Image (cartoon, rainbow, N blue to C red):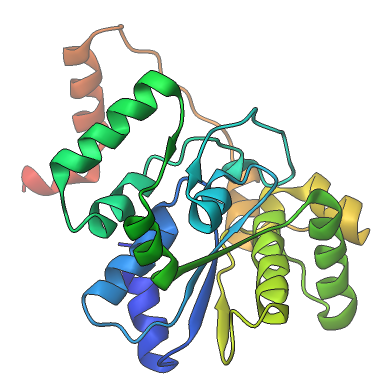
Length: 240
C-alpha cells in the first residue's frame, strides 16, 4: 500500500530522492520496493531520531540495539527495526540461509555486523541521518515562522535529515521529504516549539464532539461476532 505513494511521486518527479522518517523501516522499505519494480527513485534516506539503530546499520554496518530514549517523535522510538531484515534479504542476494544465520546470531548475541558486501549494496540505495530533539524543535519553529505551516515532530526529523544530507552532498537535486503525521497528533510538542496549538482537522473535530455510544456484550467470540454482524452495513447488504 505505501509503495503507491512513492510510485505516484516518482512518476511526477522522476529521479527525486526521498527522505523518510524511519523507525521500523516499513515506510522506507515500501520506497525500496517501488524502486525495485522500476520507479525512477534516487537515494532513499532514512531519517532517525536519537534512537538511531537504522542509521548506524546503514553507515557502519553495526546492528546493535541501545536503550530506547523517549522523544517527541514516539513512532520512531524503537531499537529493533524488524522490517530492516527485508532489505538485508535483498542485499544478501536473497540468500535465506545466510540471513537466517545472521538473525540467529542476533538472537544469541543481541547484535550483529552486516557483512561488507551486503552493506555496500545497502549503501547504494540508502543514506541516513539523525535529528536530535533540539534540532527537531528548531525545525518545527522555522517552518512555522518562514512558511506559516505547522509540522509534526516526525516530519521535522525528516527535514533535519534532508538538510544534513544535502550539506554532505549526498542528496543533490530534487528531494521529497515525507510528512508522516498530522501536527494535531502531537499538540504538546508542536505548541512547545511554535507557540501554536494545532487544531484538529474539521472532520475529526466533529467526531470528538459527537456523543459516545457503548454497548455491552458477553465475553465470547460468538457473541462478539453476532454483535458485529448485527450492526454492520455489510450484513445489511448481504440480507437484501
